[in-house]
Image (cartoon, rainbow, N blue to C red; front, side):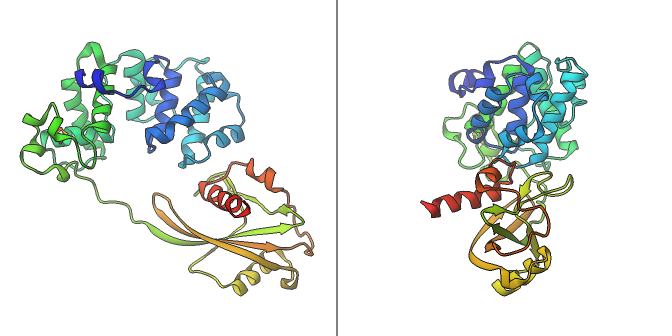
Length: 343
Ligand code: SF4
């Protein structure tokens, strides 16, 4: 905690005891670095300064604000939880760790963060930073991330935690892992724990923490069709399940490999019921995009269909309009590319 007083970053949610602000920051920072999450936190606080404001926003407004952070189920849970707290709790968050755990999208980590930072409840926060520091310091080779490991590391942190300073202790543990006992090149030479640190003393720093085996990444080939009918662009919305729930993108052909321009025009003709002589390929662009369990080989095919009869009402969007829809990050990547090319 002395180290924390001298070295911590000044982050806006740190000075707050408001459970809404703390909860919001923790949801945003899950699987997101602080530097990336900070502007999102500010944007959310500007747009939705309290839980009632977030609860009464539309889903599209929330998703738009979240756009670019990925893991969109977090945004939906965030919104649902805000509605729940506004309706059932009358705008007040549950008053302790157990109550907070009942909220959707709030796991042990977030509940502990809110309970200790906002209410001073002595429950340890165990995030990746805490796992790393504790595993190295004590030389623990139990694979992290399982419920068993969470319980084990929590017990250790609880033993170390002063009852009267749960919040500052948790903040200090997390910050020490984030800034000092870092994943690569930890600052062992200036570390206040160097003398007792098992990993340092046995020269096995890179052995800790031990990670459970990773999920396999699958390679997929996505062909996005940018069908332009007199500057009206076809768009489609995902349903409520699977990848990119409820987000919008260009119509998509999923294939097991790269397709040729001829194959693409045939597929589009079939998909939209438009004779292929009315379709003109104007250009294409390729990128790769990594998700947690998928490597997407993404092809964007720009096709003019000005002469095509409208088969359905998907040609609803101008470029300006479609940019305002909630979009997956891969779509934003394409739109940025388009702007760069148009410069
Ligand atoms: S000595 Fe190195 S590995 Fe051990 S706690 Fe300090 S920074 Fe981490």
